[in-house]
Length: 162
Image 1 (cartoon, rainbow, N blue to C red):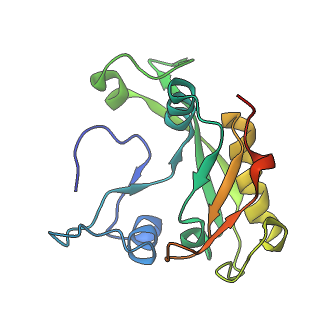
Image 2: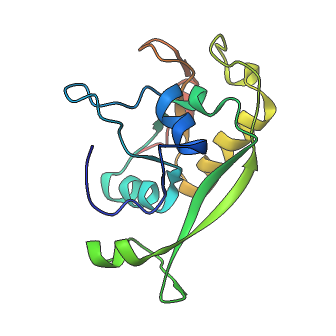
Image 3: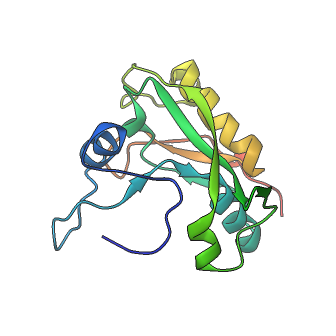
C-alpha cells in the first residue's frame, strides 16, 4: 500500500519487516494488502516537526517493537557521500539517499499494561528519550497497545512552551 521513496523500508515478507507488519496489523483496510513498514525515519520526523511547529509528539505502536533484540533509528541521510542537513530537495534525491542508522537495544517485557513512563522497560525508555533528544521535541504520548486508550500521557510538562 503506497508508493514513492521510503528510505527505511523493510521487506515485510520475512524478518523484522514481517514482525512489524504482522504484530502491528499493518494491512490495508479495504484491500487487505500489507502496508509498507520500516524503521523510524528521524530526518523526516525532524523536518516535519520543524515545518509544523510541533510542541509534543505522539509515538504510536511502541508495543510492536517488543521482542526485537535491536531497534534501529534512521538518524541521518547521505547523498553522494555527503551528509544532508535537511530533507532532500526532490523525490529522486530521497530515493538515492544512503541512510545512517543508530542501533539501540530492544526489550522483551510486555508494555501493554504500563500506565506511566517509569513502568516501561529501561531500554524502551532509552529508545523514547533518544528520539526526543535527536528530534528536539518531547514525546508526550506513548502508544503501548493496539487500542485507542492504550497510551501513556506524560502530561503537559512534556510540551514545548510556544
